Amino acid sequence: MFGTIFGSLEQGIIYAILALGVYLSFRVLDFPDLTVDGSFVTGAAVTAMMITFGYNPFLATLLAIVAGFAAGCITGFLHTKGKINPLLSGILMMIALYSINLRIMGLTSETSVGRPNIPLLDAETVFTKFHDVWATLGIDSWLNSFLGKIGIQYLPSTWGTLILMLLVTYIVKKFADWFLRTEIGLALRATGDNQRMIRSFSANTDGYIVLGLGIANALVAFAGALISQYSMFADVGMGIGMIIVGLASVIIGEAIFGTKSIVRTTLAVISGAIIYRIILGLAFRLDILDTGDMKLITAVIVILALILPKIIESNREKRRKTKRHGERLLALQANVRGEEETHATTQSD
Image 1 (cartoon, helix red, strand yellow):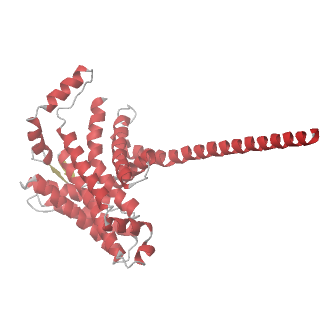
Image 2 (tube, rainbow, N blue to C red; image 1 turned 90 degrees about the horizontal axis):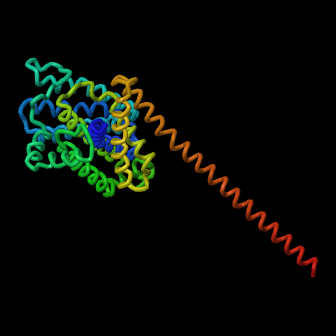
Image 3 (cartoon, rainbow, N blue to C red; image 1 turned 45 degrees about the horizontal axis):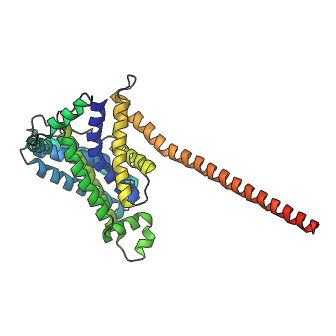
């Protein structure tokens, strides 16, 4: 049980970066961007290709972010300059990225033709580099010894991946909180709320849409780069359904933690990604489910996340109405008693 939760926690924190990108496009910009399924693989493909060629994994990850930013900007240009429907522009870019990703991974083959996957076994990644430093601190043995004494079994071989991703995701969250409070960030939020209103202030909404989609897909590609190094491979099909994963994380987080402020909302999105991965991990422990049921489980989770808050709010509203009705009834009864007492007093006089 602990091993399942720990593994889900590691993956959930990585996918939280993806969820923040989806939040930026779907919630802030109100743009149904399906580029996510392609840009996620683009980040993984660029990183795996450069690591295979011997480049520094940090540089490879940085270029993956740039590639994701470029993909998002192209989607924005298709919509703003090409006047293509937002949904269709994302679909077109997603389809184009499928072939582009095959070509990127194909650069590692002798013929430079399309290649569906790149293994990274024994390759140096950001995680292996961090583990080399982390191992010298001796924290793993201390933590595992402490947890073993209190009866926890199936302890991880290293806590380095979890600590690294906590730090990275915290930095990304702080960047998102800061950016959405800047003048450009406020303009992005205003563009998503009401484009006509923000245009009346002579704001370049097309530019804000392109920039917002670029940043959103940069975060998605960043998550793809990290996942490829975490799982030690990149595959052209690993991005299928990533938009649903991101939306599920956003919906779950908002339903549980609310959206009263930017800081709270970004924290809710990150928490939603972690909760989503833990639910998946626990669901796969059931004998009746296997990995092929992941999409079905995801659909059920999203449906429940959408329906349950409405049911809960409906019940709360019913209780509030019942309470108000009872208070009015009591007040009316008190008024009637007061009038009867006043009438009785008048008659006795």
